[in-house]
Length: 164
Image (cartoon, rainbow, N blue to C red; front, top):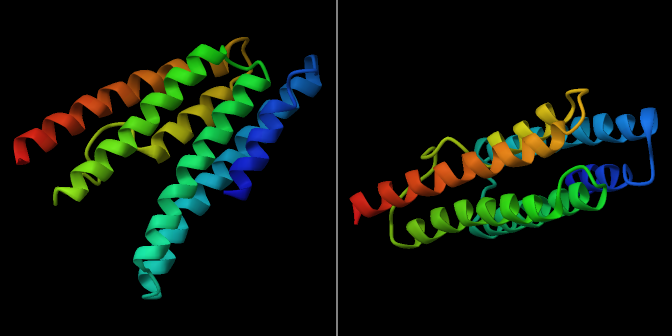
């Protein structure tokens, strides 16, 4: 979560900057966001391999993941890297993707791996497309995240409905 907050702060710092300083904030934010994604993938794997996974850890991990997403989208909006309304849409859809999985799991239905836009994919899109040195790249990344999250919502709803 700390690396996500650092990425969010870097993105937010782009607002008063122009030219190279703004570009550096975007690039550094993207790199730190990629590092955050790496740690997010590794922490669960390490917990399982070392047999130290727990329900508390799982709950904490998923909760902090959502707080991290909120921080990143706030950073993008504050840094004027994407329209705040688009950031709200992307964030809302991203949170709904996670909610559907959690709700399905509460009904005994496993949705891990269902859908094209899980959290890792959404973070990769923001980080990588956002670092493309063209005007509005991050805006496009946010739009793509929204579309992919929307598709994932439909995929997960259909998969859950079929299993009920």
